[in-house]
Image 1 (cartoon, one colour):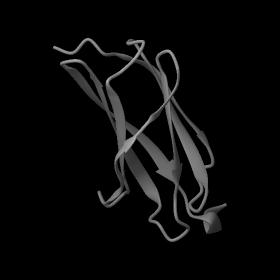
Image 2 (cartoon, rainbow, N blue to C red):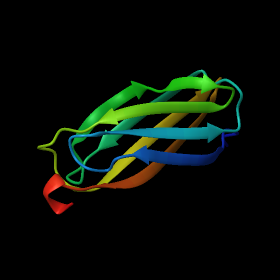
Image 3 (cartoon, rainbow, N blue to C red):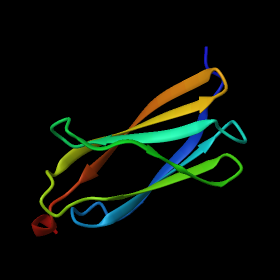
Length: 103
C-alpha cells in the first residue's frame, strides 16, 4: 500500500498544439525520492518518457511540456510516477490537445 497521495493537480497554459503547458502536482510527502512523468498522445505514442519533474517547494512538483505543431490532437495521458523510499504511486492525468486550426 502506498502512502503518497496526490492532493491536487493543475494543467495550465495553452492546450493548442505547438505551445507549452505546465503540469503541477501537490503531494502528501514533503520530499520525494523521484517524481517522473510520461506523456502519451491520443495514439498512445510516448512523447515524453520518464522525464524528471522539478521540485518547486515542499510537496509541489512541476513539468513543462512543449508539444509540436504537427502532433496529433485529442486526449493525452500524463502518467506521473512518485517514489518516496519504498512507496510508489502512479497516477494518470488526462488532458486534451487541439490543433491550431480548430481555434
